[in-house]
Amino acid sequence: MGNFGIIALFPFIISICFLLWKQDVLLPLLFGLFAGAIIVSRFNPLTGFLSIPGNILTAALTDPSGIYLLIIISESIVFFSLMERSGFFESLKKLFAGWKKREGGIQYLLTASSCALFVERNLSALIVGLFSRPFLNSKHITPCKHAYLINTVGGSLWTLIPVSAFLPVGVAAIGAAFSNQGIGYSPLYAFYKSLGFQFYNIFSLFLAVTTVVLKKDLPVMKRADKTANGPQAVSFGYIRAAQQRKPDNLSLYAGVCAVVIFLAVTVVLIAHGKPLDREWDFLGYQRVFIVALFCALIFIVLYLLLSKTVPYSGFGEWKDQKGSFFRTVFYLVLSLCMTVLARKIGIYSIFSPLKNLSLSSGALPLLIFAGTAGISFVTGSGLLAVVTMTPLAVQLTSMSLPHPLIVDNVMFASIGAVFSGATFGDVNSPLSPLFIISTASAQAPLYDHFTSQTSYSLIAFFVTVVFGYLLFMAGLKPYFSISTGMLAIFAGFMLINRQGTRFFS
Image 1: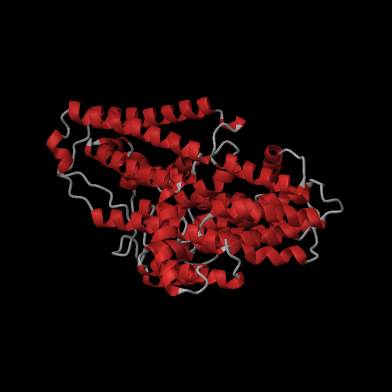
Image 2: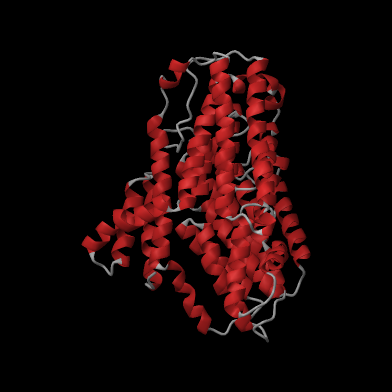
């Protein structure tokens, strides 16, 4: 890993700017990779060019977590495509016809579904997005709002509920940081104590729920939705049935059985793995989802063959949007390459000079949150931000306290600030797999989803700074910060009219 200072940010900032400007997922990211590779190779263009396929791409495609993510996406696309061919969605549409017509009904369903699948944020956005896509009514919920809900709810809950796939990552990062400083405090207990200081995650989740309950949105969401479903929308190329299926109870029961099989296998494998005893790590959770999806996939294939809904020869006759699917998958692969580049270029080393500064302990959580949010947004990797910024946060906090081995609310707030900042980058960065998956699942335009998503996230960011960490600096308890911040969000949305075009209703 290198140490190139502020210049390490250049490839990532340029990639994001051109990605949003041109809404092209190929050339901007390739240019960013090339620029970063040149920097890593000490400004040797030839060596840098050769290192892209030789080191960066190879590392991205051989990393187990990246491979598992691509497998989960592929299985999910095939599974929901087969579910649609079986007539399951047509039957479910008929069953929920009244619910669909209710204003806000689909938004409640989306929010509840994302909360139910909190275990893994990428899986939550993918499954909920693909499952709910056939039921969307553009009058009540549009692709940009769809993408915002599945992105924000799952991404915010992932670190807040201590039984998710984030638990082993967060505990391991805290444990390594405590070990480096000689602190004997339990990292698991420190993780639990940091939950109340994850102000951004709490406010971001509350803001999303508020938009659903009050049925109000910001003007930027209304403007973004006017261009939804355009030619520049990111999509997984959702496979459509060759012919419209008539609703029938058998296909409905078969689909429900497939979903139950997926959930049952997931619960059994996670319970057997005892994740709270740390016998599971992040890769263990991903393997569980791969096995569970495969079991559900096998069931739906057998149903299609035995019920003769789709003959054996019919499996080779699909006319889908393959170009959209491969374009999105390539986008994901390039985003994983940017994560590898961030690790090789040592982008997090730009915060090293902070170790030489004399900082107030009360101000540290705010600075850590802002720094982690910025770096996580630029790189698009919340997990890498947690792994690299947690040791720095613990070290800085230990240096600012009267005794280096003290573990109190300042330490818990600093750890919570890292997790909150990492979530900000995960849900907003165009280089984040979660952002890409939520955009493609909702088939939303890239730029419009970005502008609408960041508008809401910046509100949560502002409330986090003012009502979260500034009130913490004043010595107030976290429950007071959370309650006043929620009140401010609710009051602000009460001032917006129902059409989201102006303030004061």
